[in-house]
Image 1 (cartoon, rainbow, N blue to C red):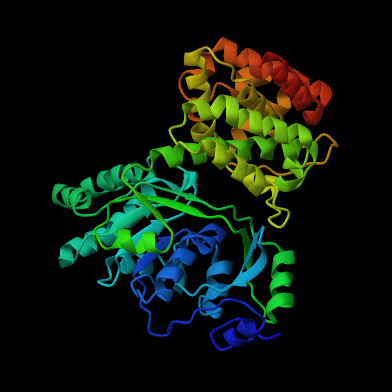
Image 2 (cartoon, helix red, strand yellow; image 1 turned 30 degrees about the vertical axis):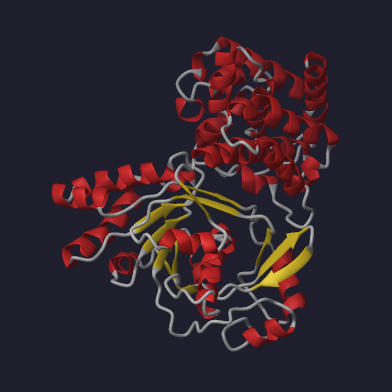
Length: 472
C-alpha cells in the first residue's frame, strides 16, 4: 500500500479526509515543539494547522521527540503528515494536519534543537513533556538556545508549557531563569523580562496509538500511515494573554483558543475533575481487570462514584462557574467507545500526577470539616494497583519513576492494609507535607483498602456509594 506523504495526500483526500489546502513546501518552522507525541499532534499541532489554513504562515512546527526515534523518523518519511481519527456524537471523520514541517530527536540531535531555538524564524517554544519532564536538564537545553538568541540580538520567545502542572508557565520560567543565572546575570534578566512564559491549560483525550488505529487508517484512507492516531471531538486550550507578539492572542482566539487573563479557574477544574477522575478510574479499572476508560464509566458503580466525587468533594472549591456543565461533558467524554483510552496509559507516572490531582482537594475538604471519602478510596485503589496484579491474578507492569520504591512496599504489605497505607503515605513528594502525618486521612484510606481487599473494587465502591447516598 502507498505510504502517506505529500505525493499520496490526494488519495486520502479522495477517501474523505480533510487535508491541508495551503502550500507546505515553503513553510519554515516558527514553533519548536518539545515532546513530540500523540497529544501534541492531536492538539496544538491541529490548532497551528487551523491558523495555517487561515493564511497565517507563522505556525509551522519543528517536532522534537525526547528519546524515541521511531515516531520522529516515521513522520520524517511521511513529510510530517499523519491522520487523526476524530470521534464525536456527530460521528467519525479523518483529518490530516500539515503543521509539522520537520522532526528530530533530542537524544540524537541535541545541537539541532539548540540551533532551532536560536533560529531567527523561531517565535515560540511549546512543550508536552509530561509532569516528570520538567527537569533542570530541560531548562538548561532551552537556555542554551536562548543564549545564542541573546548573543545574536534576536527577539525573545513565547515559551508555553502545555502540560498538566499548576502554574506551568511560572514554573517553567523559574526553571529557565535559574538555568540562565548559571551563565550570566545579564542572560537571566533577559530570559526573565524579554521572553514570555504564559500559563496554559490544555484538554483533549488522546489515547496512545494502537495497531487497530493504524489499520483503520489504512482501511479508511487507502494509505499506509505509521503515525495515525485517534481522539475525541472535544478540545480546549486556555492560555494566558501574555505573548512576545501581541497579535498572537487574537490569532489563537480565531482558531478557537480561549485567551484569558487568568488560567487558574480552568486549570484547577481540569486537573481535579478530569485528571483526578481519570487517575481514580485508571487504578480501579486496572485492579478490576477493565482495560479502557469507557469500560470503567459503563460500570454503574464507577459512574456514580466519579459523579459524586466531582460534585461533592471537588466542585465546592472550584472557581470555574460552569463546573456542572463541565462535569456532565466529562461523563459523556469518558463514555466515548471510540477512544479506547487504556487505564494503564493513564496510570503511567501516577506518583508525579497525584500531587496536583488529589491532595489539594483533600486539604480543602479537611479545612471545611467535610468528607473526602471518594479521594481516600482513590488513594486506596492506587495503593492496591501498585501490587502489579489484578483481582484475577493477572500481572501488569508499572510505568512510574517511583515504581522501584513503591511496588516492593505494596507487595510486602499486601495483607496488612494499615502497614501498606502507612508506608506509601509517607512520601511527601506524592501526598504533600500534611497528609503523611494525618491520622484521620490514613484511617480512611486504610478502611477503603481493607474493603477493596475483602470485596473487590466494584463491590467496595458500591458500598461507598451507598454510604454516601445515606449521608446526603
